[in-house]
Every structure is written in structure tokens, then in C-alpha cells.
Length: 418
Image (cartoon, rainbow, N blue to C red; front, side, top):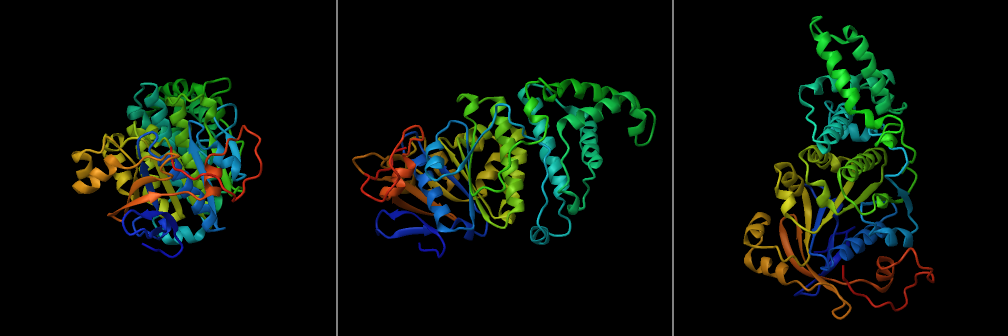
């Protein structure tokens, strides 16, 4: 398999020929899914593929998102911008950016970037409530009203030319909800009988959104974003402030950052390679999945290649939406996976020899010098070996906390452990 403009994923285990694939050449989307047991070589292979993808073209932006600080060395070695998220840095869940004309033309006359942005914001709020065990219920209508009013007060309309104006914040919504509670008559549609419910809903929402106010738990999410990834060619969105604890707050931040990257991809004419490691943490909640599925449906319109990396596959089949996300990954890469049984093999369309190859694949280590993986491209599967060049190995294994000599092409032992 030798696709022009592609990168080498590995060497065919039987023919010894290179497998060169261009994720951006797929008709069904540019997303990729990599899975394997700890120590199988999956993270090593994902990092190698990421490096090669960026080296392949100057017209590509690389973005890394993961909560356990495993990609810091790669980012440091490549001179990327590291943005630590989750402390006091402002991050606005309502931020909207202009959509380029060529993207709008490709999507048709009925495309509505503002409605899509509002839906993602509503999904975020739904997830906020879900992580706290709170049901939004029919108060959603009042929340939608407050959200729409927030954009309208900033002069942001369906006209894309208005999307470069300053975005509203959650605290703007708090002001609007306060006004709705005090003067609900200004927001009724048909009858004065609506006023009482609007007022009650507004008071309830004010209480539930209290964490976004000053000194609240989500204080940094209540104001404008205080960092910008638009001028960077390589960005590492570091969630290390969470101390390795992946809970509700971390999941919310991951959701927001994915939206931020999506908005960035809409703006740029460049291709965006976006790695999400530890992706299983995003697959647990239906509320999170609804917004993620929307982004996956539209990612190829914005030349966005999302690469999901995870340790297990079962969480992708717990919800129908998660399975739909997986179906949109045109490229799948299986490293050694003990849990690959007949049932999972059937789900992925693997025959018995392919299933056995995944079960017994060689994990990466110093002795073998490579790892094995099963590569699926558009539904066709090939067994391969993943080898690294000495310089790639040096980048992948780089420790940002150690002072080392400049990376060179001289002999560094190449292997592919995780």
C-alpha cells in the first residue's frame, strides 16, 4: 500500500513492503483509532505516526490532548507550545470563531455555525449537570433562551460576519438569568402564564450555574479564554494540573478543549492532526458523546484528522453514539490486545487469523526492536511491524525534565515499547 502524500505506518509482516497511508485521502473521513494493552506499543506507535504526519507537510498543525502527561517529551523535543489547562487559566465554553467562506460553501446553504455552536454549549451544560447528578429536564428551554440572548446581546447572529465579535461568557448568561427571574414578562412567547415558569427556571439555573461565578469551582470557565492556539504550529494541551485524576472536572475540560480545537480547525486553511490519548475517559457519558459525535460528523469538512488512542474497546460499544464515532474512524490500528475475543473480532470484521494476530502480537521492547500491529484501512486489514528511526526514537523517549544534548540522527537504539 503506497499512497502518494502518505506516511509509513509500518512494514508488512509478510511481504516486507512499506505500508504508506494518507489519512487525509479517505473518502469517509480522516479519523483514526489506535488501541492496545499497556506496554503493547500503541502509545509509541501513535507518537511516531504523529511525528511523521507533521514532518510530511508544512501545511499541518499538530495538537495533543491527554490528561496523564505522557506526551510532554514529544512536545518538548519538537519545540511545541505547552498550555497547562485546569488551574486558573480562563477557558470560555461559549467562544465562537468565524467559519471560512470555502467551508460554508462546501457544507451547503442550510449550514448554521451559530446553531451548531449553541448545541455544543448546551451539550456542555448538560454534561455539567450530569456530572453532579442533576437532571436539566424541561428547564432546557429556558437555558436555550438565555444562551441565545447571550449571543444576541453581543451582536452575534446567523450572519457569519458577526462571529468575530467578542463571544459571550457564562457570567453574561448569569446576568441574563437574573433579569429573567426578575422580569420574566419580557421573555414570554404567548401568554402571561409562562412568566412563573420562566422565573422559577431562571432561579434554579442561577443556583446550578453558581460554580461559574467568581470564586466558584468552575470560576475559570465563567470568563473569556486567556490563551490562543491560532498562531501555533504545535500545541500540547496539558491537563497535568488535574494530578492524574480523571473525573468529572477533567472530562469537562477535555470536552471544552476538543471544541476549541474544532473551532481552530474551522478557521485555518491548514490540515490539523489532533491526537486524543486516554480517549476512553470521553466515552463514559452520553452527554459528552452527543457533542463529540457532531464534531466527528463534520471533521473532514475542516481538514481535521482526530486520532483516538485508548487501552480498551468495550467503552466504544456501551452507547450507540460511541459506536457511531468508532465507525467514522477510517483507519484502525490494533496492537497486542488480550481482550480481542471472537465477539470483538466480529464487531470489527476480523477473521480468525486476524483476531489471533492481535491476541499474540509482539509488544515493543528493546530486544525485538519493533512492535506488531494490525492495520485496517477502509475495512481492509494488514499485519505489520512498527519500527522507529533513531531520531524518532530520541524524540519519542525524550524526557523534558532532563538536560540532554541536541537530538541527532546518530545511533540511538530503536524499539517500540509503550
